[in-house]
Length: 115
Image (cartoon, rainbow, N blue to C red; front, top):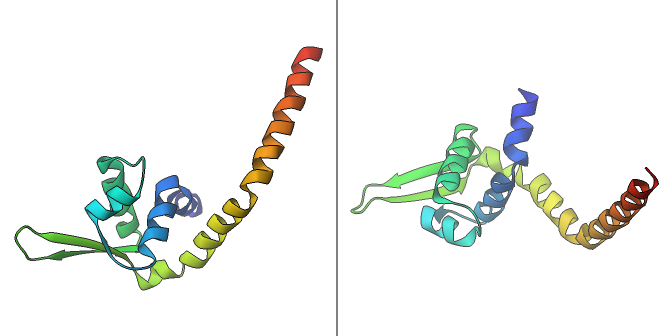
């Protein structure tokens, strides 16, 4: 169970969507437009899974055509501080991580020459 929870909140799209919805509700098309690289199918699956876990709420308004909005639940808001903290850490340290990767890859290349 623990692993499945980490898989859900740790996947690429869930983190982005939680961050986007943290400031307020959004419609499906807004989420699709503001999440570069996500397909309609992946957006649908991710939102359904977040709804199933109680992190996101889906509201259907009885209009023609029907309007559907998504928002982070009160329970989901307990997840936003660590999610946004992780995103902030990644943004602040991306240059250092790239430098570490280069150094590692260069060292690994030297090891390949030895064999």
